[in-house]
Length: 143
Image 1 (cartoon, rainbow, N blue to C red):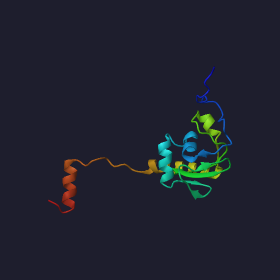
Image 2 (image 1 turned 135 degrees about the vertical axis):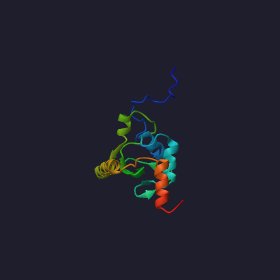
Image 3 (image 1 turned 30 degrees about the vertical axis):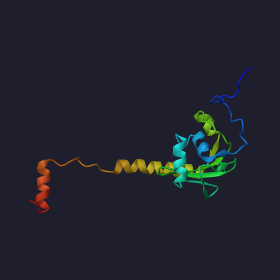
Image 4 (image 1 turned 60 degrees about the vertical axis):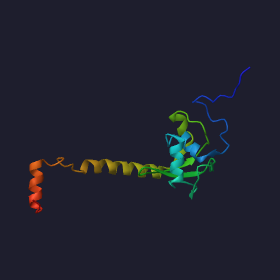
């Protein structure tokens, strides 16, 4: 006699794909956030919208819903394909949503700008020596 109450293995498709899922749990299952607490924090902070409206963590998402959110400086716009509530592998998580090509291009552009800005920033020589600090103080009129 089997118990059957266990969690499905990571490669399994969600059994109730047509049923709605909580937004915080779906974002966690789709691997956008490392923990549900981080997903809840982002939602409560107003960084997540569902179908153009600000959402709450307990809001249910359905297939076809457009979810817009920000991870750091990078915007994301995804359309829910299926509603999974168990966190599986990255390959399974990628089947839960379809990403908008325009936001993917914008994210790549921002990533490239940040990479170039980091190289263009000239770092100083570090902390001035005691002799250099005294010379600067003399220029500024301090004794």
